[in-house]
Length: 235
Image (cartoon, rainbow, N blue to C red; front, top):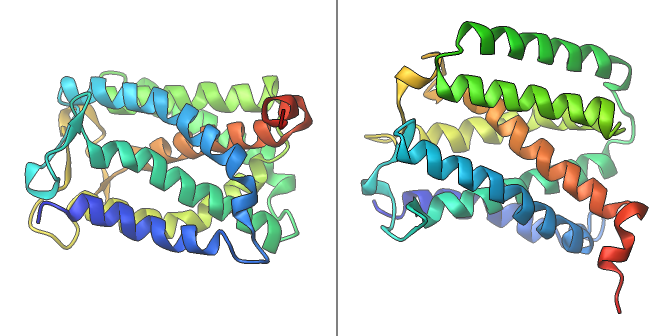
């Protein structure tokens, strides 16, 4: 079924897209901030993806893709960096509107500190595993940037949202890594990861996803702020 990866992207995207016009949510009004955030965030991840595909840290099963490539990546993989961030930004937007209380606010520093300690420890012990060390180190650096340089006020909101995003994450990544199908859509070289999986999903994928969505939210919030208002001001 050489349209499976494309169908996974479409299935993840269609509901958030339709509900973007819901009168209580109106996420479409933030598109002028969301789409630049998505495109800018996609660039470093696509470069990373191209490199890791070239050195066989991961790759793609031709059985489940259309065969259309850009920069040696399947078109479906490039769409992944548009579709999944859109869905996550939409979810983050919804939680901010529908859940007024910031439940994790007083635990934000503790959660961040535990994340950093955990990630640094595993990056050290698995320093010879490319997927592990790249993902964990980059996430640590970005968390430090958000906390101490950018001094963002929304990290606890992100942590709360990501708890719920784990459900679609398990479904989408589960399918892509072989759950319920004959072979993997995206295969991973276990010599370059911890060889620990959540069902069929490499453990590192959880933190790769956190880094991807954090970067998108950072740009969304930055572009939505007064600091960047001149960028989007109509002439």
